[in-house]
Length: 452
Image 1 (cartoon, helix red, strand yellow):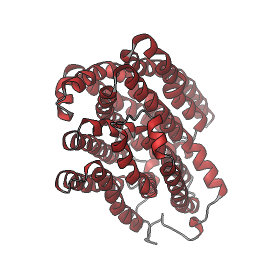
Image 2 (cartoon, rainbow, N blue to C red):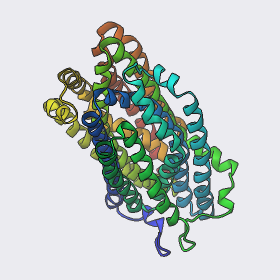
Image 3 (cartoon, helix red, strand yellow):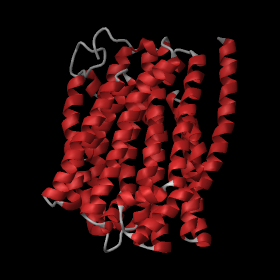
Image 4 (tube, helix red, strand yellow):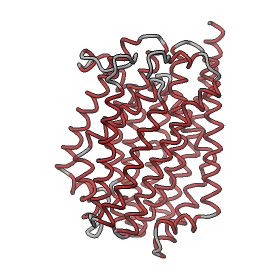
């Protein structure tokens, strides 16, 4: 960031303007990343085969678990950084920056090594079969070898957004996706490296942009830059970052358990093709989820800064704007997948059995989408203000307290349809819980404004 740039605009600029300024780059970046995941699946589905596509789906739990540890350090620290800047504590902000890198190096290497040691038994537990295990194993060997790169890359991108540089965070993601989209077909179709080529393209692209990210924080002219003191772990920063980062960690960890239950439930009730169908459904569903996450990322520094500055009217205003935008996005996804599921599935595969299963999945899973945007924003809202316990609870209601029991019991009653229906039912119940918690919090804000 330039020397004359200031994050104080977060407390003075028009809320609508700020949200667009911060959210649009994040949305572009998240959409681009999600579109990469979709095209990645298309390349693998058409260039390697449907067993490879299913094998890719088997890796989702492990990928989610890796992301869980990365987000705990990166998102937690970036939220803490926003709050400290709202308090004009720039010395602490620089310490947080250095600690983000150290924490991600520790978690990235540790997770990568442990996961590699137990990789094949873990993949079998996740639902891999003799036909899909080789593809899942080949993909994850390369992803895990570069896990520390991924952790630092995502951590620094979270800091870029939180420090008032959302455009640069967007550029990092866009260039990563661009490099990936060039390398992926080259490695798969030209070099014939199969699913390994797709994994290698992912790590190479992140590594290239990590070098650029690191250079941004080297300048001493920036109010936020690397310092020797910041490269030493501070217990209070680690503790607060981990506590605030627990909600996204638990969400990703819960996603790991959920995908295991979904994959094993689908495989048990309908075979490997059903797991491949979920791979398609999940990729498309994540496109809309990522856009909402982009809005959440735009909301986070605004809500965090103004909460730290005790400007509660602005905190409430940015929340409701984000809810409205998220709801429009999710209703759009609902309409597309309820009306044209066959058209979407045909992009990924021409296999009739796989198409039929995926179409059924789309029509059931997307039923709850008109309301789920509200739940996602509410959970992130509490996290943005450092209210870790409330955010953790909301995260758990959707992905643990309601969904996991349903995934265990409903398939025994309805078979493969029980797996699909578990998702929208849990979304609906968790949205009711989010509404109750939000009403309570808004009453507290009213009291706080009165006292101020």
